Length: 79
Image (cartoon, rainbow, N blue to C red; front, side):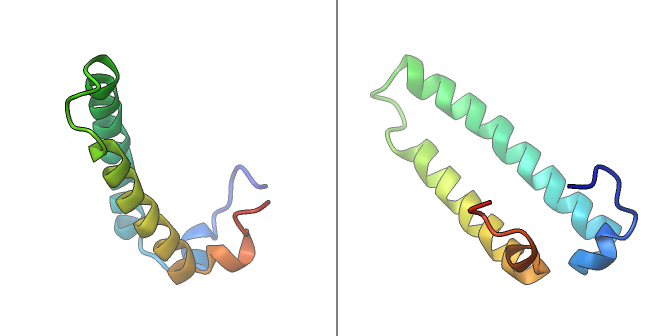
């Protein structure tokens, strides 16, 4: 695994802004999940199953993006 790869954007076929947008989307989703999970952890009767639905939706987009960018072939999830 490379820590620095100046050809990464070309490899995944994205512009800087497309890649940056995905990164921001991921960060916002994880911060949202921290908030949701904390609320649900303290008050289990509030927002039942909602954190699961948010994470499932994120994972569906994540897997779809991995296929679209070719990362699913280059680095399978099982590794």
